[in-house]
Length: 295
Image (cartoon, rainbow, N blue to C red; front, side, top):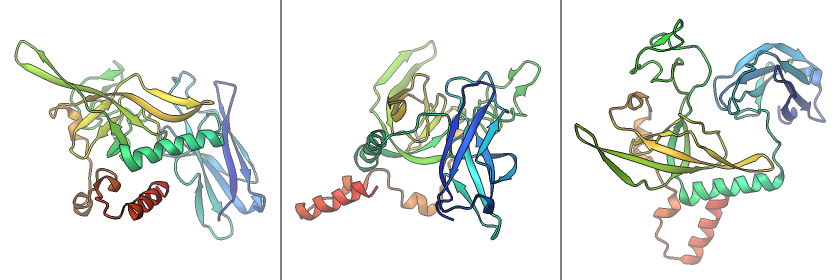
């Protein structure tokens, strides 16, 4: 079922709706496939079906959107494609979704790829990204529908977010967290040490304020408000922003990160090339070059 769909795009000049367009492959019979449009506010998970499946159509208008959404409240779309003859199902795109954004040109794609390669092969460390939920059912444990706010400061159902679950499933990725300075302040009761630093990340997935970062030493960081997304022709190349380290008493330390015994034992936190002591420089250079460009 390869090459059924060539492209998927989102366009609109009206705040009341978003239009989703897709183009069938040249060798594809549109009547042979049932297309269902799915939507999420997260790039990688929680997609829900919008309307019934269609046959032969290449357009869908989504009118069920928030007209007062902010700049960084995105809707992501993907297609569920079912072969009407065999019943087989695939998704397009295979990972993530498409939102209202500028299409990337070849130069932008190469710049983004080079940033990702640099992080994955040299500069970055393995981290787990928990993206904060920004849409969904309100928390039944701490949200007051009358007051329209949380009534508990510590809630293990939404972890202070106010939406059921609090965070999406973690994404294992690589990120550069710069070494933070230790800042100590004196309060009436004791000295308090805080750590504030910045991160450097590639372009996928989007990072937003309030997201949770967990490093291999179980240090936990929250993403601050001022996130800088380096762009070329409106296409994101990389992302930078502030991080604040959380004390171990924070409720976000109760957000579960579940790894198997084998995953913990074999955990590789930095790029493998940094732990190799080369004896044959020529062979090492060739293997390192190959490793970097096969990331």
